[in-house]
Length: 308
Image (cartoon, rainbow, N blue to C red; front, side, top):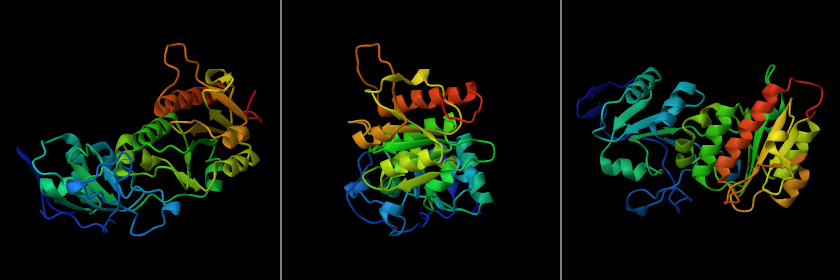
């Protein structure tokens, strides 16, 4: 590992030059991503990988997100860069220690270089460049993991990076075992998503599918009960009696579940609203639904069917 030391004025690493990662392609900035210094708006596609087959995740920003990246050890970390003059903090010490143990190239860069590289609005002085998250086959998600029945989350077109990150953080905390993303017209794991997820992306498995309706049929064929969440649902999410394998399907921020996806769900549930406002943010709704299902799975012992 590279030598590093902490001083009262911040963190000093050797070398002082920025760590070298794969060149990032230039292009328009993504929705919810900052464009970098001078509005360059570079994006990263993992050295030319097709976006349709890419989950993303090759740039991780934020202290907790970078710490979890190192702790999980599921993918190679190419380099870590720090902004200059960071105030001492235990989490930064921990990141440095783990980086040294894993022989990750660590460097302190100038403020301008750091801001030019950053893609989220508040990277907290730490950026890691890493291998992209490798997607798994949908069939791998539907298989029981030891004695744990699948608890899957399928996202029908979430496009806001902040929402996606918050949903993934909740999903991991609620015990979701796998996430299904559309391979087209949906947000990938960008730096903003990774930061909002606070490291959850390192502990989840992701499958990319060309279309959710066909994926839902695969889930049904494998005895996984599919629960769509939509304001038009006639069933209160809290009234479901779930056990065994379950998949929760969340629609996009504007229109909710698409018609065909809703038709393919075994049940479409809603969250009862008793206040003046008629809707919830997608990430807030996902949090309520994830934990409602997690509680049902805990309270209802496993049986031969998915629903009582």
